[in-house]
Length: 261
Ligand code: DGL
Image 1 (spheres, rainbow, N blue to C red):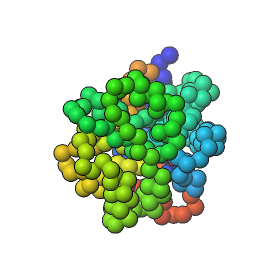
Image 2 (image 1 turned 90 degrees about the vertical axis):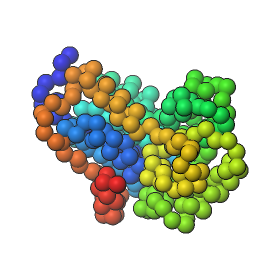
Image 3 (image 1 turned 30 degrees about the horizontal axis):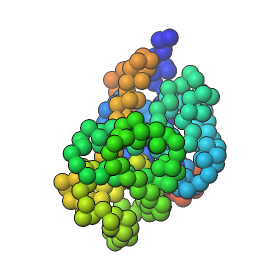
Image 4 (image 1 turned 120 degrees about the horizontal axis):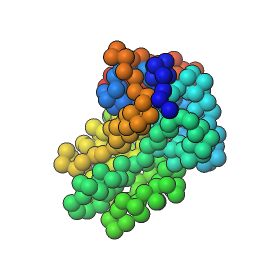
């Protein structure tokens, strides 16, 4: 069915456990500046990546209800953890709404492969879930793909720390066994991590590709909207509204700042 003019003007709802999904929203705005966007970050309940799967599912459903109640025409689950825990159930419940999830960008990492290990950083839940294991089995069953769970990193980024000693010490310790090995690429399997990309590059050097799924997700969003005739063709620049479950006003300030980085 062809969508009407008004439904094309409705916002696209973006969700993440906190500020991480803004790294994906940025790419969507670059690709489709004419769209209206509404972003909901659940910073009050972050991090999700160390919670029980059922708990993550419940929190994700609550967040998506908020975005749908604001008239979202499509949903982007801009959180690898929430995608692995809840995207299948979301798609079952909201059959009429395009729901796009994000997963670790293993496909591009495999297509760039030369030699050595592919390191995948992510939350403990993302890297333990069935979805991730299926992805590895599909994309690179014979490659050395090493999951690197990074508990504690999301908390630092939520506090607005993107560089400096704490992040650098954390990363050095995480990667100490890999620093002298052949590394093919590093995949950022959490939407918070692109904000600390500079620090990751400083550990391994600029020669090792650091890959994230934000651009691919934005492209997939565009493809799905186009297929459903839902692209906003008003020709005007769209609006971006940011909501957050946290009562701390600094989170909203931080969110708008991250969109500018
Ligand atoms: N940005 C989320 C992700 O992509 C972080 C999850 C968390 O809150 O631990 O996985």
